[in-house]
Amino acid sequence: MWIAGAILIVAGVAAFFFMQHTKKELHAMIGTETLSIPELEAERTASDELGAKGSFRKTTEVVGAAHPRPEGVLTAELSKQECVWYRYTVEREYEHVEYRDGDRRTRRRTEKMADHSSNAGFAVIDEAGRTIGVDPGGERPDKPEQVIDRFEPHEGGRGSVELFGIKLPSFGGGNRTIGYKYKEWIVRPGQRLYILGEVHDKIGPLVIGKPSESGHFIMSTRSEAELRKSRETQHKLLALGTVAGVVIGLGLVVAGIVS
Image (cartoon, rainbow, N blue to C red; front, side, top):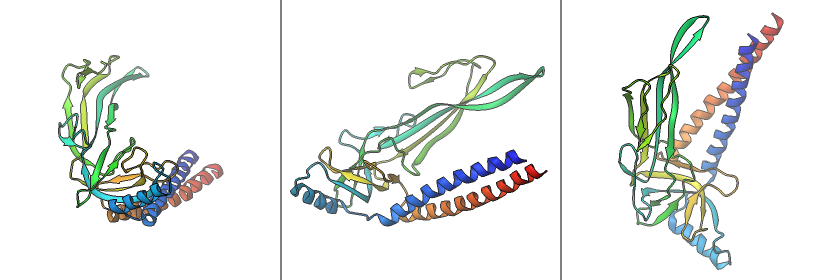
């Protein structure tokens, strides 16, 4: 009983830290001003005039439509859709065989074979056709469009599978491959985006990305209002989870010690 209580306490503490992170993100969205591209250009010009060319930094929110980089659109690996960002995952489902006390047991398990996100930059464009660069920095957009979610049975038992011309390893030891699950998400050109981050001019043109020091970086297909509502709901649920986990966990630990 006390073990279950200890697990609940740990879960409650983890929920507390997630709650604090969610609260900070919410406060960052509330406290950060949304600036237009001309306003950012004006502030950068003022910074240049003070002799700080290339050192402009501004934490802000920008809103606009996703726009391809100068080299053109990306092509998603699985769906072959045109996009400015994509991510795909491949999971292998297999039968795991183990022997215990002379009995043969077979269980279905999953392992991740691939998880790749594009890291090329793109831009957002406003209604007047003005653009600002976006550096994803390895971060994933919130709520991208899912274009693939399919399972393909594997023919041939323990044989290998080929993905984008690369042969994935075969598996032995009685672990029969059942099949592969493919998922892919994209951000299409024209998708409305909300971005909170740090604007800089390190490479010349204005780019928004991860803060150079502390701070938050959010890219989302949802509006700021939708994100705030989502974070508020998440914060309430995590707060309840924190209290429930710690209180019930302590109760179980005490009951286990006393009994």
